[in-house]
Amino acid sequence: MMAPLVNDGKGRNYGVDVTHERYLQNGYYYLLTGSLFKARYLGGDGVWRNTRLDRNYVVNALGGKEW
Image 1 (spheres, rainbow, N blue to C red):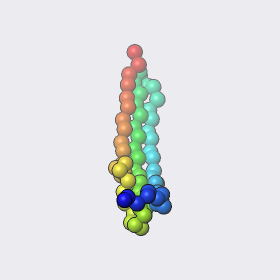
Image 2: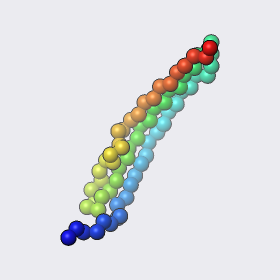
Image 3: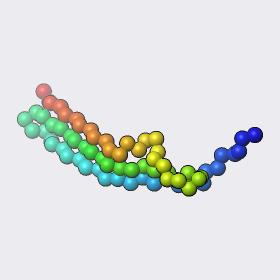
Image 4: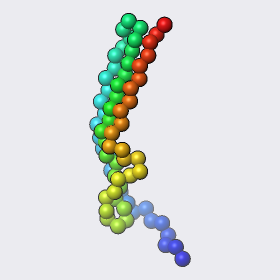
């Protein structure tokens, strides 16, 4: 027989985000973002582990031109 599931763990998420945006100039614009973060959880066995979504960083870039 399987043991019942128990939700006794804890989670911790922290990080920093940075954004640089250039507004429309000569018909061009762009947006750059970066995030450094940590996502962890404490299991029922008392060990801190990384979550499935903990990638440590994310970088995005967006740009365009208006006609």
